[in-house]
Image 1 (cartoon, rainbow, N blue to C red):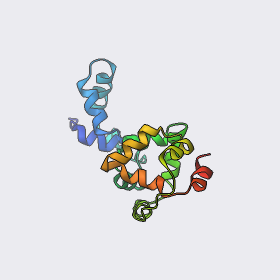
Image 2: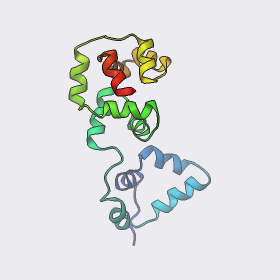
Image 3: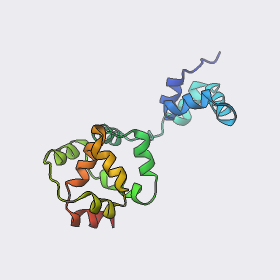
Image 4: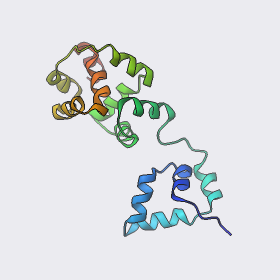
Length: 156
């Protein structure tokens, strides 16, 4: 007899975010079929085919996500994105979570928001949201901690 998988265990084995699995389960149509397909597979088969693969979000990225206050999905979207999102991921990926917090603790404010938006291609309204909401302030402060020249050399 094949042991039924819980949704949480399915997420752990396949590295598919739990929220994605839950949305497949609730949906109608092909995504529900995908959910049922995975759910009815032998757990040993899943472990053999998915278990050895690296997680979607590496451990280092998980630490950074916690430090800058964004979701893993957002970071993953930036990592696989294009344009300013990919550049932002590449910029953030240079630092460990501790380095990010150390840089932000210096409270250096070397560039105004309009210039920061122009250099990074991050919309001005997005920067204002990061500035306003406490959970995103670390990301905002990290960008503000660098000079215009430093940011220009990276984001150009």
